Picture (cartoon, rainbow, N blue to C red):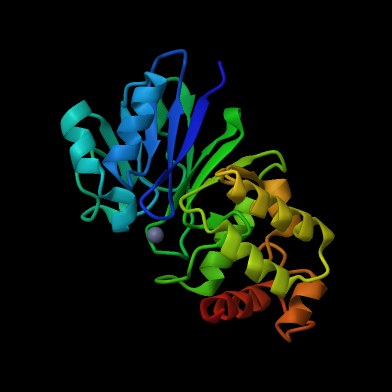
Amino acid sequence: MPAQIRVFRCLDDNIGVLLHDPATGACAAIDAPAEGPILKTLDETGWRLSDILVTHRHADHVQGIDGLKRRFGCRVVAPEKARAEVPGADEYVREGSTPKVGGLSAEVWETPGHCRDHIAYWFADDRAVFAGDTIFTLGCGRVAESSYAEMWTSLSRLAALPDDARVYSGHDYTISNARFALAADPDNAALKARAAEAERAKAEGRVLIPSTIGAEKATNPFLRAGEPAVARSVGREGAGAEAVFQALREWKNRF
Ligand SMILES: [Zn+2]
């Protein structure tokens, strides 16, 4: 039976996600930005929280854990590399670990770049990747602790997933990402259409999450660092994709 997935807003721009296995009744929160919106969504769906899957240790992804754990006694799965820094963690995972949510099985990918402990959860049967702050709709996370090369490798791995893979990211920065994307890749017709769609979604109170790998490959400038037009926009024509990626990410920091 396919997983059921709900996406909702938390805090200012975080995205909460609940993943439910209808066969077993298991239900996981991907990160725990805030208790309130997670409780509200559990209430609306009638699902009972059994697990929390943590993508990385930053406060806006783990601060809801304590309260949820007290209430539900749920299991908390966290990156091995953040061992001392995720409150209430019960189980640590690393590259290749295969944690389950009821009958749903994930593969853990280490995706350093935004921070050194960052991981993604790939649910192959459901074609869904929970990517935290590695990739956003039309953008990517800031490179804080790891090298640009590591972040580029992490993004390239995600880009190699099937085009129909759904991408659930940890924040909704779509409108500001679209503005930057149009500056970096101004002649991309698919991007122009998507930016217009993002504006419509905002007006209607929707978020463009999940995205898909296919849509991101066509419109996300960070995944398009290998395209000559994008290299040209950062004055790095002829440079390798990784160098173009770094120039793009540094430009976005100042944008
Ligand atoms: Zn973060």
